[in-house]
Image (cartoon, rainbow, N blue to C red; front, side, top):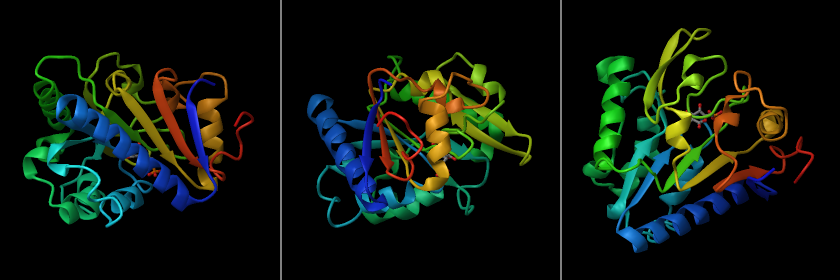
Amino acid sequence: MSVKLNISNTEAEVLTQLANYFMQVGTEAIEAKGRFSVSLSGGSSPKKLYELLASAEYKDMIDWTKVDFFFGDERNVPQDDKDSNYLMVKTALFDPLNIPHENIFAVNTSSGPDGAAKEYTIAILNYFKGEEQIFDLVLLGLGDNSHTASLFPYTAVLEDRTASVKEVYLEDQQVFRITMTAPLINLAKHIAFLVYGQGKALAVRHVLEDAQDIPEFPAQLIRRDGDVVWFLDTAAASELAEK
Ligand SMILES: O=C1O[C@H](COP(=O)(O)O)[C@@H](O)[C@H](O)[C@H]1O
């Protein structure tokens, strides 16, 4: 296994480890080129990380006016819907830190899934001014069905070879989501997974140690070489043979 594992005993410790990593990567990016581009994950796990970053302990560690925020995926819901990743991050991070509006690159879900995906692809291309779309950091989670971002099992987006943003239809839930493709995520300078809790232990093993089966375990699409760190607690790492 060539990914780096950062295993902590408790959920609180995992969050602290990742918050420290975020600050280290962000500080290096700002020192090197004046800005830090980060793509955020959604879902249930990262809210506590965002709250920690906005806490008194961390909030003065970085110049937030130099941080540009993107979203690795989004639910196809209005931005004020309780399921919106944007709303979750706004509440946990953007509002408490008074992040300037121009630093937030949210998915415009009012354009419909296909329109939103195309617009977001263009927004990212424009941000990188025609250069390769290399985010300094992409944060990812892992679903108990081995999805990451909104790269879900047996969806067409798993075969997409373009560095872009696409809509995804989830048959079982009859909903659309919008997601960065694996080739776009894999361009990132640093990738960090945040996974904690026993409920994720099997998925972690499937993705990191089981034989390759992309349709079943889509997070296997995320590269293993370069700087990819899995921040896990002992519960999430408990099914791994190699630790
Ligand atoms: O990377 C991501 O992973 C999650 C799965 O995380 P969970 O904590 O909700 O199980 C995904 O649904 C989320 O939108 C995404 O950004």
